Image (tube, rainbow, N blue to C red; front, side, top):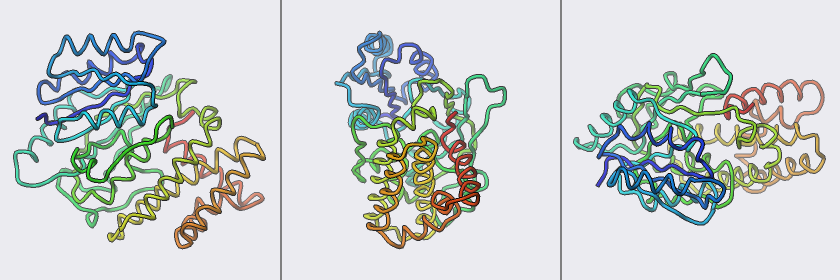
Length: 339
């Protein structure tokens, strides 16, 4: 058994994947690196995956599958994982070496001890192309540092401050227990990855290190604003799935419930902002349908979302509505880092 399984979803990733894999190799024999070739056909992704498996047997494993999208690549990694903990690192991202060793030391201490850790949280850095200043997403205001906690120990999550896929390492068995399975051929499923398991997270630990480096700024990237507008149907579908997970979950802890509602609020804001920015009547109708869907499924949740600060701006006409919409847009930019 390994300490940590790291899945790298790869689709025509030849240009970036070596940098990603090389940053993870210093984990040594405690780590398995699952290089998931998601049906790549346009470059040497498959061959590079096989090359690393051959060069680093017992550490790197190549997994080849028909194209199923980012979510199915994560699913394949989770199915194959032999580590006690599970992490996803996208093929164009990488990790900081010094922080990596601290992460492994923290995970090792829990495995060797008698306390169960469900979720490890670290900072991540927006490595935006062309940006001189690298913005860091950190959680000092929200989570106690370097101590095992529960949801009752949460402090204040600031507006725009969320635990994203880049921030988390989950206990593998917990992910299997919550039956996490991401939809195929769908973008933005990383939000499901970090949202659906939350009611199963009983303990977490915040390690205040800048571990994950999130590479953004390419024009073809899924979080490019125009790309997101073109995929608004997928954004809305993911939002509806998350609403469904919230409605089905039995969430007893008030702080957890409030955090999950705040996450749904930003998802509704992003979907609404994309519709507004598109200038399309068809997309504006999709926005209205999404809000109707929430109202029909859960009236109390609808009222929380509709009359929250961001929700008001997504639905008010005139200058007042536009000014709050702009504020929501800026928060959405911060949340996704889209350009």
